[in-house]
Length: 150
Image 1 (cartoon, one colour):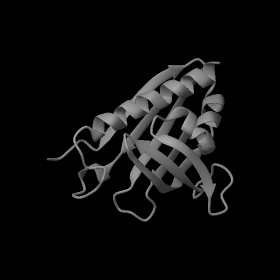
Image 2 (spheres, one colour):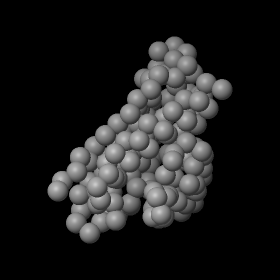
Image 3 (cartoon, helix red, strand yellow):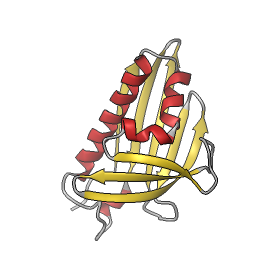
């Protein structure tokens, strides 16, 4: 059975794009926003957001826990922050945050492309995983919204 691999969630935030971007691009705070990511830390000498910077995400979904190396693919302050989880894997999950500014308001969209959920034998290949990813994106952007508007 094939599962959907791509999804997204979006919200409008009463804060400038620079404020929103600064929150989501600080990967050491991802554990505050995401229901799956418990914490993240910069790796391989990286100390902040930049294309090619690496970090490790420590995650949990239900009773399953895993750590995954990640690399930033796009990094434009106030506009986009994207990374792939599972460096070196052709089935790595790609996460993207896109910001559309309108004065002091920002439309934040989080999207994902998760081919791993259709790889036979993958721990991510199970009924309900797609829905979990969508729910996680919705929760993540809601938490970023709350922090940005506080």
